[in-house]
Length: 331
Ligand code: NAI
Image (cartoon, rainbow, N blue to C red; front, side, top):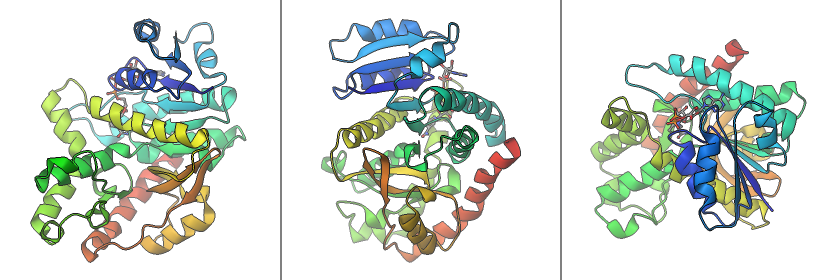
């Protein structure tokens, strides 16, 4: 029996994400919460002939509490998406408050749940959730995750396209490290599985172009949607695939590896290796983790990267640190 909860379920990401979770046989109960329209989305999804029982909640009558009670996994795509011309700071000011209030609800009603944060800026919203949980004395770094899966999905898609091998489209995986915005996004094409050809890895111009596209893939969608939102469908796909891994780990499957933005303290020994590898003392970083029934079991080392990739790491640390520290000002 697994209860999944989506906070912000009526939104551009929330709706397709809820659809994908309704379609996941590992979910037996699905609670949808939003400040608008969640009951409608829930009734619509409830007509789909899959096992999950779906319920929708609005704020009145302790809706948040009822949605969260008994939750195993809580996914947060609530907030506002970026619009053309909006700065990161504008976005932070609005979403930080929303995420803080929802995190308070989780701390009070589902403190043991796995919390997956999609709301941007992830580099800052994840530390906000941590601070709220600490304030309530229920923080467990092993159960808090920033969802960076879309960066991996984009890096994999764009490089498979670049080498013109459609058979690799759903097989290629390019690890991405760092954070989840601009220069903090560090795709490691040299670690792709299956390996990318040397002709690709040695072509600096192509690598730079694709790295840029992965880092600013969100802008590409914001521009193409022309004011009607940011990435929603690809994000829902990426978010659902992360939830699927979490569910498999909860159900006892061994060796489930997922990329995510985590507090390195979640696995102190593994975290120390990462700090050594990147040459910086950062609190949070996107890494590959091994998941288990209690959350992060191991933070996996980055391992060998090329000199070019290493040079990108240096540029990311200062920015990432600033993003994480923004939270202190907010607090
Ligand atoms: P949207 O505006 O379409 O949906 C957001 C939903 O959140 C709305 O239904 C809204 O009513 C709801 N909401 C607002 N305040 C709430 C509250 N206090 N409690 C519950 N629900 C609340 O936005 P969209 O496109 O779904 O994006 C959501 C977030 O995801 C944004 O912050 C966006 O930047 C982020 N995002 C993250 C990505 C990632 O890779 N992690 C990729 C793309 C977007």
